[in-house]
Length: 257
Image 1 (cartoon, helix red, strand yellow):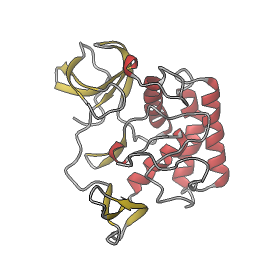
Image 2 (cartoon, helix red, strand yellow):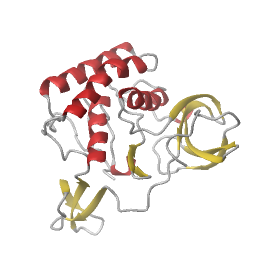
Image 3 (cartoon, helix red, strand yellow):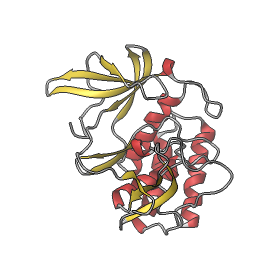
C-alpha cells in the first residue's frame, strides 16, 4: 500500500490484528476493509499511554497527528497519514497508515567501529551484546537529511533508527508522540549534518513550518507549544544551519535502534 491512501482513515470498523509488544505504549496493528482491499494501520489508544514527567498526560495521540499535519502543510512529506480516532476498539487514540519497508539495507545501522563505509556518518561508538566495538552510523542521504530537518523543527525527542522507514524509495518517520515540547529536547540518531548550512529549499521548508505549519497544528497542541514551534523555526532560519548537539541534555535516544 502506498503512502497516499486517499481519505484517511477510511470509513468502516477498525479491526485489531495483533499487538506490537516492543512499543513502550499500547500499540496495535489493525486493519480497515476497503473496496481496494485491506489497509493496515498502527492504532495507539490514549488509554494505553505511559505517563511521562515532561509531557502532559494523554496528549501523545495529538502529537502524532500534529507531526503529520506539520509535515503535510509545510511540504516535508515525511510522515505517513495519521489521524485522531474518537471511537476505536480501546477508545480514542491515533491511527497511522502502516508502510511496508523496502527490502534494502537500513539507512541507520551498527557496524564494527573500524568499518564505517564511505558516504556514511559515524554518530557514536560503543560495544554490542558481545562486547565488540561498534559504531552507530547513518547514510549521507538527501531523503534522510529532510527527515532530520523535520525532527529539528518538530523538536523530536525520540528519533531512533527503527523509527526511520524506507518505503517505495521514500524516507518516512514514525513514532512522533514525544514531539513539540516547549523546551528543547532534540534527541536523534541523525546528527550527521550538524552545523551544515541550510539549502535554499530547506530554508523554505522551515519558513512554511513557521507559518502554515504552525497554523495547521494550532488546534492539536497548547498555544505555548505552537509559539515554541514558531520561535524554533525563526531561530533555525536566523542561524541558517543545522543545530549541533549540546551538553545540557541527552542528545541520542536509548536504545538508539
